[in-house]
Length: 226
Image 1 (cartoon, one colour):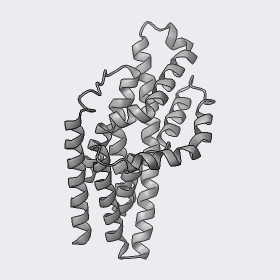
Image 2 (cartoon, rainbow, N blue to C red):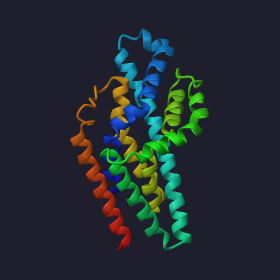
Image 3 (cartoon, helix red, strand yellow):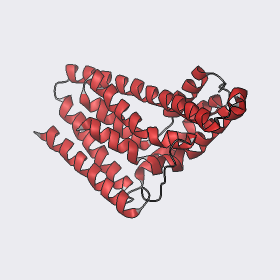
Image 4 (cartoon, one colour):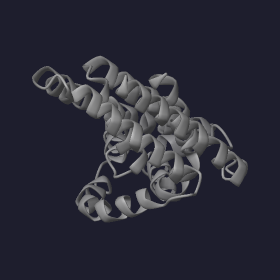
């Protein structure tokens, strides 16, 4: 259930990503094409854009997996030192999932304030991204990984779920599933998929998704209190 919830959340986070990271995604794709002369000379510019987007998305997902591994390790160590910690961690994850559902549905905007307050601490990282060479494949991976470390309330919620799993592998898999779910947005920036945000941004879709996430949160709380 956690893996499917993580993947679903990744897919449905596209409107949020377009608002918060759309400029970064476009800058990375355009920057990689303008600095790679081989791509510009190619008779398949769309193909090269897709390759760049795949590398950026892979780097982003690897960063998520690393964070998930650390969260799972932290949960494992905490649970093994404090046996009662598992229930508490699950309750926190469930509450965050409910808050995320309210945020996704547009009924509460607290997570946006958290993102904005934390964002200023990541300005040095953003300045470093601008100096990363995007001509090489490892440069694109590094830029994608830096992108994945930017402050995001949705990512924080998934990390809480990974922490509550109390398992290193499960924590990594949760974040990997979330990263896979975000791939359509990354690829759409590269031109593979003309992902339309019209229906995903509609009130009915966001309300439905918010209710689903709230349901997942309530289920997590139920498991914590058993």
